Length: 88
Image (cartoon, rainbow, N blue to C red; front, side, top):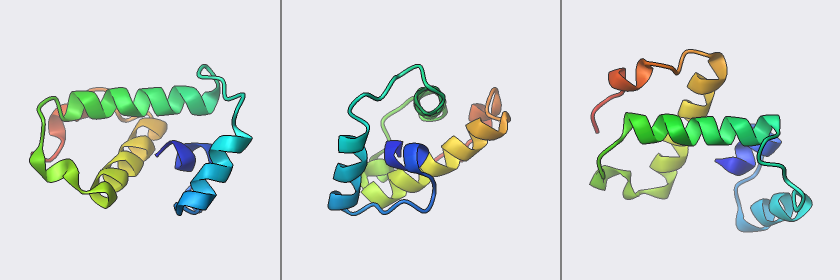
């Protein structure tokens, strides 16, 4: 999810591609725009899914939810919509 927020939706998600992104971001600043989006997205997901969900064990599914949540947060429509999340 962090790689997508840093590099965009078209970023590759194979290990070597993600490794390259993180190596290039060695000086990543948590308070940067991307850092704030990542923090806000994870906070949103924490509110939307407060209980442990066994359905969220699949990495691809978690990535999809995180990417969708990032888009919701980025649109400015995230605040308060956590209650409307689908109960998985």
